[in-house]
Structures are given as structure tokens and as C-alpha cells.
Image (cartoon, rainbow, N blue to C red; front, side, top):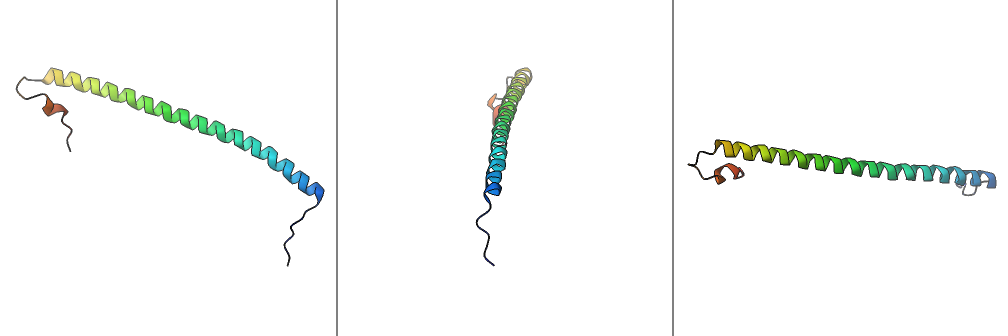
Length: 81
């Protein structure tokens, strides 16, 4: 059976009208979603950075407090591999 390629004029215009309206809305929603996602990532990144800084500060305080003058201080900040 041949596929129906053409449709009635009213149907076609209606189709396009519905289609375009939905498309615009979803496009705006997508942009908004992308912006929100980017903000969330940025916030998470900065939060992590602050947390790292806090951790580093407390680690340095611990090192200062526990340093006994015998072992070289690089024993503490050598990264364990």
C-alpha cells in the first residue's frame, strides 16, 4: 500500500502551529535547564574548593602542632602512592 505523503491543508497548518509552539517552549525550558545545571556544577566546584582549603588549613595546623623537629617536614606532605 502506498504511504500517504500529502495531508489536507487544515491538518498541515494545524500540525505546524502545534509543532512550533511546543518547540519554542521546550527550547526555552532546555536553555533554562542547562543554565541551572551549569550553576549547580559551579556551586559544587566552589564548595569543594572551599572544603579543600579548610582541610588543607587544618592539616597544616596539625603538622605545625605535631612537628617534633626531628623528622623533616616533607615526610608529612609526601603523597602516599
